[in-house]
Every structure is written in structure tokens, then in C-alpha cells.
Image (cartoon, one colour):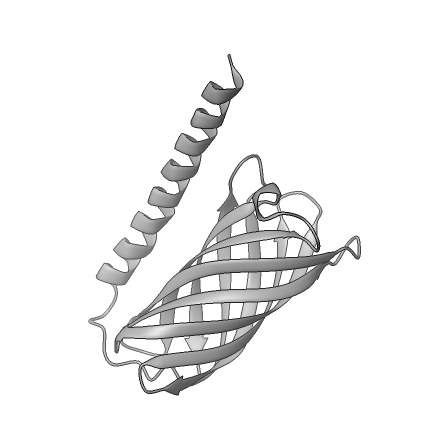
Length: 169
């Protein structure tokens, strides 16, 4: 099989994984209680699971942070720690900037720095996501992230889709 065909198979697998996780998160949002206005202000903690692309392991972890809403925009800071299905684990400090699409949906971008906790290598991470209010203190979240070692190109590191739930205080 030629290199182009192998790359196309990888892209198809990546699209299938992304659509599967998106459908799961959308279904959970639709099946939850009717969405009420979310303040998008204050502290939160959460847990997530995810899947990697291009041979990356599945991941699981915890995140927590603080958001401040300014009109239709949200600024936030977050700490995230996760492990791979292998033995690797990462830790990140991230900034989040979002737009409140309506009072129950937040669309955001994130950028951060971190380390392999088991190896000490410096990392960076960038991503985009969407968060859905559930009508109570919980929110559902879907995020696509790209991570890499500091100084490496954007295209060479692993990518992940994460689905999670947050508890807002």
C-alpha cells in the first residue's frame, strides 16, 4: 500500500473517532435536563476521557479551573492532568478564551504549557472546544487538543478528542 493510501486511512479513522465522540456528547446534552442559563463564572472541576489519533493512546484525566465572564466572552485558567493507556502522564496549565453562543453553550479556544510528568519533557498544547450547560451545576464538554514538545512543529505531535463533565461552583 502506498504512503498516500496509508495517510488517507489515518484521516478516515480520525474523522470517524471525532464524529463518534461528537455524537456521544451531543446525545448526552440532548438527553440531559432542559438547559438553563449558565453564568460561565467561577470555579469548576471535572473529569474526562478521550481518544488519540494517528496511533496515540486513549487518555483519561482531571481538570479544574476558574472562569470570568465579561459580557459575551469568557476568560479562564485551567490545570489539567491526564494519563495515557500506556504509562505516560502529562500535566498542563492552560488559558481559555471563549464566546458565549447563548447562555447554555460556550465555544472556546485553549493554549497552554506543561510537562511529561513521567519524563520531565516540556510540552505545549492548543485546542478548541464546546461546553454545554445541563440545567444544573454540571456542564458537558467536548474538546479537540494538539500537544507537542516545546520547539517541535504543529504537525508532529499527538492529537486527542476529549469528552468530559464539569461540576461548577
